[in-house]
Length: 173
Image (cartoon, rainbow, N blue to C red; front, side, top):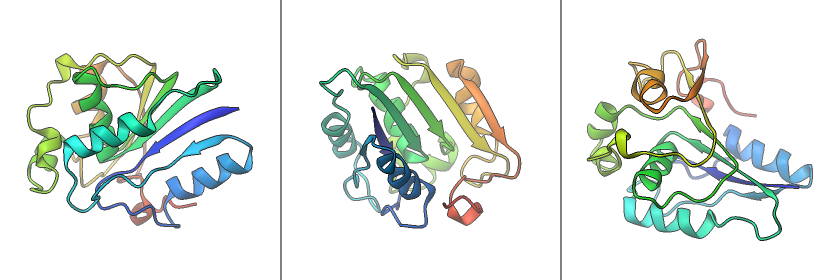
């Protein structure tokens, strides 16, 4: 059995139509342990509160089970901020999906603090990580590979026409 931690993004109230909600159900149905917490104040997130929630929900399983993290959008910046601060939970694998670009994040007052001062040179990911991003993502128009994949040396998958890889771009169940 594998333990999965799914981290949502800004303004995500874990709607039934989102692929993360669907994935959590599918994984549970296969007998896996799934943690899919509602992060605090998703409409006005506070970085410190999200880091505390990550620490709480990101505790490695005590039974030696594989621990996999899937982060989407602002959840990716949460993971990178934790890694830069030395607060990254110990995972076996990490999937980073559709992170917003630093300029876009900085332009949204409610989440600007997630990008402010994020030094990718200080990020030392402990687990193998892969980045998945879509063409035409309005939250990362330059491409996540440019902002994150190349600087962090991540294996990267680009989804043609994928946008933000959310229900608005056809990625629900």
